[in-house]
View 1 (cartoon, rainbow, N blue to C red):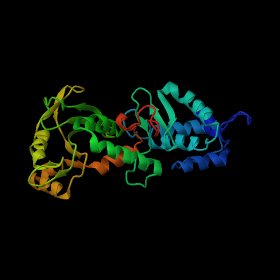
View 2: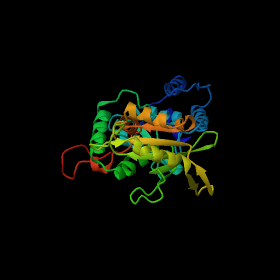
View 3: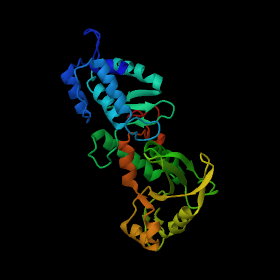
View 4: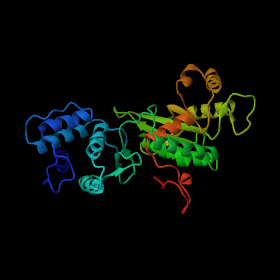
Length: 317
């Protein structure tokens, strides 16, 4: 009901930080967020509250996240507050959200997002990594690319991959002792993903910092794909223990992640060495995939990309 008041703009004109919307404009508002709800002539605040409840019953994008349509409602509601009333409007919105464990914030792209306070998980419409990027997003992409040029394998996993996969809806993400090589069995990370049907898929990640190619020997920071073959077979064949269900399970899919390029020859070579069943279990992710997904999910950049205190440059996101 509180959020319905904000959307309707039910405040005295001299106090309102939100646009007043009559029946016609409420229908237009929900059309703008890609829904089919039309105001039926009943009391506006009650109708909006009922509509929001229906939207919240839609499938969520991940753990501790809100449905895409609800994220679009918040983004559309706050898009009109570009003047000095911006922070006041944000405070009113957060007074509605706080008791549910969420808060709204403006990101560097000047759009409003929702964050789950306890887990810091950001609710946003499903990211499209193939869309055109803004100037600010391209700058963030370049900063992350420079970081990948210089980071270690452990930093790639801990500072980039773990936050990224958490934001994409994977959970129980567990690093498998990469630093001391203990109990890896061919994987640096294992995690699981819950389908809308409540079935669970298990994933393993084998991460390499540099380029992955099929040359005769590794050189210049690149890795030979032959070095990964045995690790992939170990990953797919070795059980992991899931403490949430108290059972040992097999990995359903294996991510081969590279902080550099994964050449076409390397992908083909690995595919030819695996039988048909195992070939379908392999997923590749190279630098471009990491950069694009990291930008569109609006994750904070690793701390090493921030300017030093007192230095010129953008403040950390």
